Amino acid sequence: NAGVTQTPKFQVLKTGQSMTLQCAQDMNHEYMSWYRQDPGMGLRLIHYSVGAGITDQGEVPNGYNVSRSTTEDFPLRLLSAAPSQTSVYFCASSYSGGLGANVLTFGAGSRLTVL
Amino acid sequence: AQSVTQLDSQVPVFEEAPVELRCNYSSSVSVYLFWYVQYPNQGLQLLLKYLSGSTLVKGINGFEAEFNKSQTSFHLRKPSVHISDTAEYFCAVSVTRGYQKVTFGTGTKLQVIP
Image 1 (tube, rainbow over the protein chains, first blue to last red):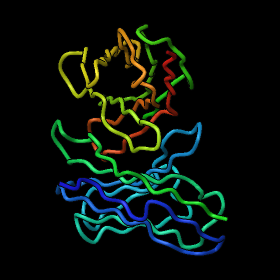
Image 2 (image 1 turned 135 degrees about the vertical axis):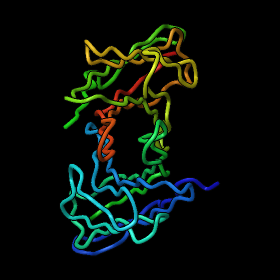
Image 3 (image 1 turned 90 degrees about the horizontal axis):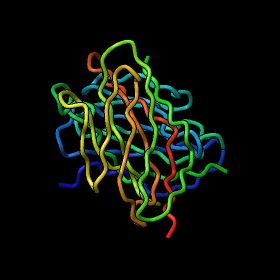
Image 4 (image 1 turned 180 degrees about the horizontal axis):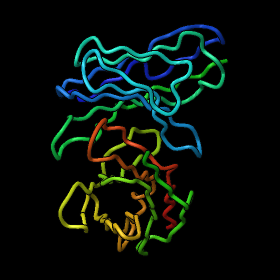
């Protein structure tokens, strides 16, 4: 099993450029989420999804878009990158419901630098 | 909404000494609690979890944590640390009902000194 796969691992953008961070999971998890990790701030939730076609905002959604057309994929889009979006991004997934719920499996992370 | 507080941003400890990493949470409803570990330049992996039942939970690598509902705490402990335990540790909480947002603390860097 691949688990949660994120691409790319590293990306450098110029201010104003757009890009998509890809996230795919092969565990048939209903719940998927995106976090950003910044020094001293822990992990902050950007967007999450509880199933195909259902998404919602987390703590820091501004500047990011998501969609969930399939159970497996949950891409994160930056429409116009800003230096404040320089961060390490993690995708995570879990089952929905029951005692296995909320136990997150993380991807390896994507390090984004915006110049 | 739930929240997590990790008061110690860094904890230095000598090898083979015991360690406790503190975590306090806030929620008006019942919660699930987690500890995740992040080794340098890696993603996060689950260390242990409290979902229900016994309040003392054991995880990987000899770590354990105790859920204290009255103190709203979930402190992580290890009786004897090893150099390989050097990492950043994150406490996390989610409510047991509704959408499953998982909220993380700001992390505690454990530095094991040889």
